[in-house]
Image (cartoon, rainbow over all chains, first blue to last red; front, side, top):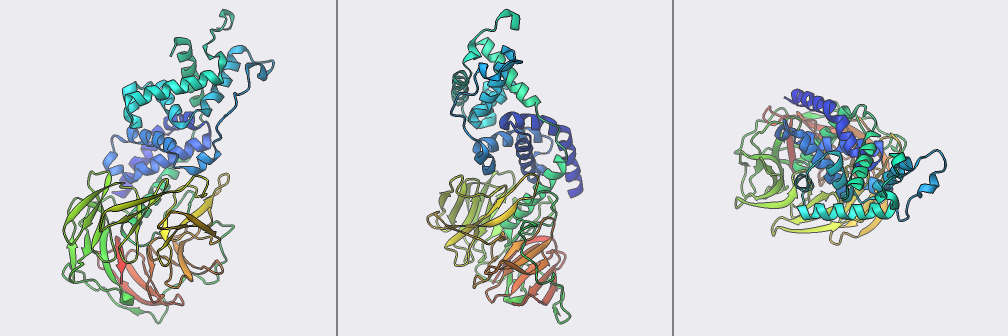
Length: 173
Length: 358
């Protein structure tokens, strides 16, 4: 029985690991942290396997988001430094970067500076294409909380990336 | 969100996710960590100590290879003079006696099987055992047998059973929570992700202590355990670097009543659960190096491993001797860590989570 559980679990991980790590990477911005996050979530899933088998993926995804938000992995939190200053401005990247590339790099950095809960909302909405209701259900919060977190995230991104709202000239599209 | 902003954020999030590399060996690592969690959870849920037998990935508790104190005693083997006590039969009508004057206080689930099985707790009022309800999937009896912390089938929260009254109290505590009883069964120490809690089973009062981030450096899964005297609790401090296994760097000691961090002790060993400390505080049973199935006996004063032996469960008895289980056998070690008595468990008890008590 144990062998079949292990084989089933291993097959699940091998099949779904890449997608789960992508989500975790979008949450952490770091390969090792992402794999640690997924590994911990999978380990928790393993302990519940007989009860969740057949529907393990939603369980694992939910743990990934919750663990990241709750910050139980203290080491990761310690390493995470909030970005108080606006990241390098568009001009700071020098020649070789067109305006669009510069914007993307700045936006990437700004995304990584968001608090975990705000980033989780954006990952669920824009990477996983979840609805507001689904996002609220996964994060275990109300619709209004999802909306307010998204609004705060956007406000922060606009602060950090002043060019975010600027429509790019036609030539750069 | 306006459309251009919407599109840009979407693109940025997806670009970020696409930077993720292909994970290698994740299944094996997750499996090892999952087994470890299961083992620790079952152990702290139902017995006194955990030994990490099947470990392939980083072991947060492990003494580091670099910091492992020198073993001055080779792993113990049953000595020629050890008394073999045979295979005493087990029944629910009489209390199962163990070497060293101890007895079996609880018989839990199988350690390595996802099999639901009837579990038993010693009768707090007379001899023999009470049978737990069929829907109990994991159990952690107090040493007296009065209370049992249980995980019930299909319930994500723990419940506390008062064996004397049959009353269940559902707790707002997740089933995966590690819990260690005090030696008199009057308090239950629980490890939470953000600190520790102490439950008074008689009143149901739960006192939670938050431990500030940065106050401790426990990487990965960390277990709070009682110190001798049980007015303080310890949390192994560990660190990890690059892909090296986590290593224990000391013990953070907290006041059990206030949650205040009192000090950091330079004991590079992770206590394994209830009964880990000798009554005089001189020795502690700890997990050993990565991949090892050994329990180490660490001299607290010198940090030296004075003995190590294979075991799934081990506790110090009040007289300083050690009682250990290998799954199918019980071994009794003298104060100088030599095997003095052995007992072979009957099939009904072999491989089960066992709780020892005096």
